[in-house]
Length: 256
Length: 384
Image (cartoon, rainbow over all chains, first blue to last red; front, side, top):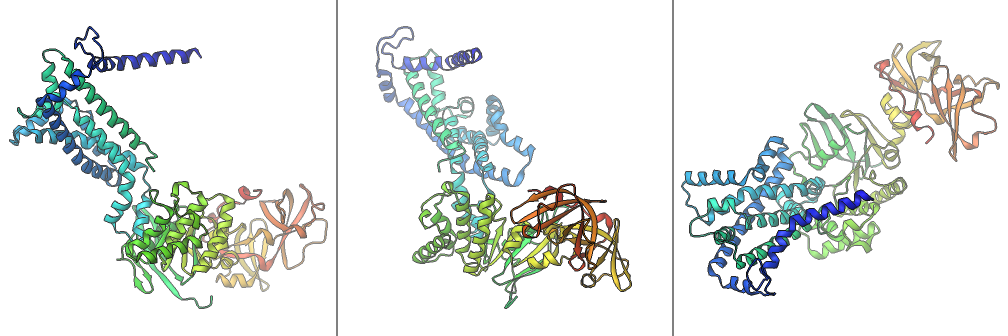
């Protein structure tokens, strides 16, 4: 009994440690006074200011473009990769190499990508950020789709072939609908990561088109302004929502 | 078999997976409308053979003919053959109705025709009210029927069934045997089913092929396999068997089998059936229900019977029959005696008895080697 009380206390402390700063940020984003030290009453003032900030909206659009493009490409190739690994390769070394981009420190990947783009003389732009994000997003999508595939009964495909549907039709009628929850979960995760990824984007971004995290970084260089709190709160909500949806799709029972 | 007409011919088919031979020069024919079983222990190659019929595996050599046409180059989705999978493989994201309609839609039939045939199929399996359910909300028995309907509705030339009853509990399994047999009669399609359960094969199949290590050991009707096995493996796999191994001799115009414990008379018909000659190694197999038991004190069994003396180890009452285990000098024998012919008050565990069987009821099978005789699986099954 005592152990349990201690455990409960301990886990509460961990949650407080994890989430207190974030909670603080959200509260401050509604603070009329704009000072981190004094509560001046509830206000949506900083959110309104955000919406009038052209530069910021532009950066948000850039982020959305990068995240959408990277997610779309990663969803397709990540799924194909997962199927290849599950069905054909079954090779530990190959497996390890696929999931490496998830583990490599961002800074290493960022430098590598930057050198690579310089080497092939591709000018830095939103395209280079997108390509860079695809590199690690494929790994995330592949990892999640693979989990889903490992529950997949291959007899289902054979049954479809047996009933007269050729392989391509079988893929679209049987395989795809059944692993779709995995693909959606993987894509949502990829989208979220891409949306607020900083280090790699910072290295591979062109001078004129910053993404949201890069812009925020430049805004806070001279201290945290209240509108950044509001912006961070929005990014946080979007990310949290996407992760919650992803988790729902990622469940093994799926949505049937 | 009246009016038997060949539908499938498997000619000298061999299939290897790495170093294991899943099918080793298999040849057999299956007739139109026949209920045919591929019977054997797991790993004997029966499923591989079934998958080659479906087109999921391609033979390394040999040919599979359907209606005289070589099926080898025909891909699975073009074969007039359908399969019921062991896991049923119902599409979880489709309703029962859509599962059954799936195959017909691939043929591009008109919607009205599809609807009519799906409804007929649901009627046939007795589950018309489940059309809108998803497979996740069906019981094991219902899934099995839907899987069957999905395959039958295509009206294939042959229906393949991979361990169709293995996933059901025992009571349902016994019911479904009759049900499958009824369905097969009704639709008139040839059924080829794979099973490791000899009882299942005997009760359902018109004919069965007993397989082991990729080879077909014997093909025959259940009666033929049970009463006239051509080798010891089949004799022991199909039904229970008491086995005595020995060497054949011919003396005073009678055939004898000299075994370790005694010399038994064997029937000349059996010697002839197996084409055996003097000096050959052979085994005599006695089915438990052919064994008679009498008290040692009573007159010796008649001259047309072989006999041994022993002691009763166990008596188990099964309702219609009694199972007895008798310990003789060298071994345990298993006997099954109809309850009507056995008075329980007459025999007790520990009684000395004589165990006997009619000479012509001893089944003779050739042996390559005495080492060949696996320990009978009797003891584990006796008192179930």
